[in-house]
Structure formats: structure tokens, C-alpha cells
Length: 75
Image (tube, rainbow, N blue to C red; front, top):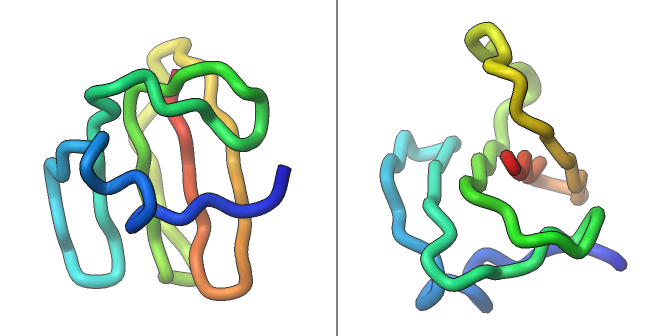
């Protein structure tokens, strides 16, 4: 599967944070992860070249990279 258009799914996602180049969404409607097909709980999108994440709490992550943005899906 290729890509993920946040705008296409925006009505099914709740935006939690918007830092300009980074955004955090909650999946309110069982939207499927384009990498594995399972519903994800949160979506982090960034146009930044580098991002630091806090220690992983055991959650699974899927990553979808596009030309100008990276999407990180937390399960």
C-alpha cells in the first residue's frame, strides 16, 4: 500500500497537537494503518528531517515515508 493522506481521513482523526511541521492525531474511527492494515491508536506526522522520541513503552510502531512527510503509527 502506498502513502497515507491525512486530509482524506481528517474527519475520522482527532488532532491532539499541531506544532507547524509536526502533528499528532488520535484515531477515533478504526482507520487502518497503511503499513500493516491494522487500526492504529495515534498518528504522528512530521516534515522535519529529525525527531527525538521518548523511551518506548512497549507499543508497536509502523512507519510510512513519503517525499515530504513521515507518518508514524502507534499501535
